[in-house]
Amino acid sequence: MKNIVTNEYKAQGEIQLNSCKTLEDLEASEKQLKKYLKRKRKKLGKFQDVMYAHDKYSVLICLQGMDTSGKDSLIREVFKDFNVRGVQVYSFKVPTELERSHDYLWRHYIALPAKGKFGVFNRTHYENVLVTRVHPSYILGEHIPGIHSVDDIDEVFWEKRFKQINDFEQHLVQNGTIIFKFFLHLSKEEQRRRLLRRLELKEKNWKFSSGDLKERALWGKYQQCYEEAINKTSKNHAPWYVIPADSKEAARVLVAEILLQELSKYTDVVEPELDEETKLNIESYKEQLENE
Image 1: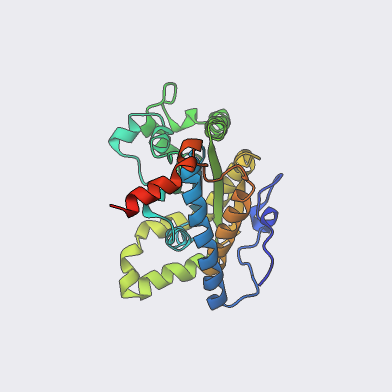
Image 2 (image 1 turned 90 degrees about the vertical axis):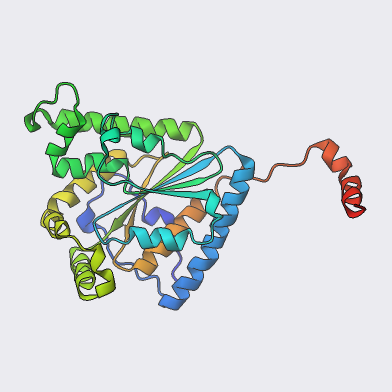
């Protein structure tokens, strides 16, 4: 199997999405990829166990991608071997009335993982510079002072929002959250095939919405907005990784491998040692239990 180098997928400098590949050949069969993923996700689960005992870090994983890019199945497969209490998944949809009564980051902030846990955002705070940029009228529902019409939403507005997101993430990192941001980079042709599959297979019909086709018609605009968002917000403390997503199996392996390689750099994450009194009396505690 091909050696995976995480920096090959990290967004560094100015990237152009049309130059980034959407299909990665890892030189392995589907069966081999599944076995490889199984090994990696067990190690990730073990890391979370130790991180929980260590009690100083949390991990936030942000997943973005066009419709059908494989976010749901990636979450299911990559985190399958985690302790269920150690990983929390949030899928952010259209904001509720309560969420719209707060600032746009509020609903994401209250969903952040506690120390010792992994949090997975299926769609993220980046929707606020992606779907809202493609459909700026959505911003009007936020009732922001000084924004009365779409004409008030200019480049200065978006630059401020990018800065707010960067500041938000930097604050999280400074307080112990390790952030990973993955863009599942799907080709337009592969999306067409996956949408057709939803229509052709009865058990997949429920996943299809006519709105999928309306958003697909805006493919070019979305790609432009994704590219700018990645370039504006890929930082050393919270990098973006552009993951080729035309092969779901390969995408899952890449995400798992990147997580494991990067988290292994946190060598301070170790199980805490017993206090001296417990160490000295461990044999007597065992004897007490054995003699009950």
